[in-house]
Every structure is written in structure tokens, then in C-alpha cells.
Length: 102
Image (cartoon, rainbow, N blue to C red):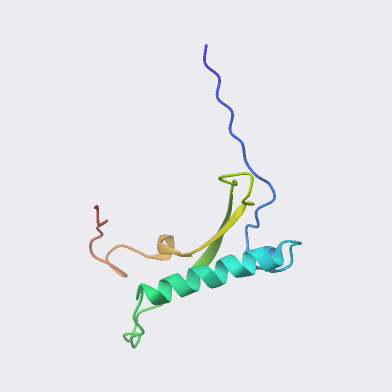
């Protein structure tokens, strides 16, 4: 018989407020700055005029701690800015979807 265990780290913030009020605020802020710089560098988005009758898609931060690769390095703090695509309605906000695959 094979048993599996799911390890969930309970010390990662689930909200922006949780990140900026945690004892690891400095690390989480650094991770968020790194993510924003990466998005800007890669020209991830383009500022456009919102078409009449359309709504914006919100976003949220997702936080994750990555274990140290070596004893010399500490944990890696990662922050990702993700779109709340689940708030869209097919036929109203979009007609079709696709996922680029490399």
C-alpha cells in the first residue's frame, strides 16, 4: 500500500494585507517588486482605453516560499500577480480562449 501526504505551508500569506503585515514584510515586498519589474521588462501588458460597456478584470497576489537550493542560500520568496479570470462570463467578456504552448 502506498500512502501520500500533502504538506501545506501555513506561513505563506493569502492576501496582500497579510503579506505587508507579516514579520517577513521586507521579503514579500521585495518579491512583489521583483514581479512588477519582470512584468514591466517583458511588456506583459499594454495600457489601453477601456471600451464602453466593458469591465476590467481584477488581479490578486499569490505568495509562495521556495525551499533553499543549497545550505548557503535561504528560502526564496516568490510573489505572482494573477488575473481573476474566473470573474469573466463567456459570450459577454470573451468568445473563445486559448493557451499558448511551447
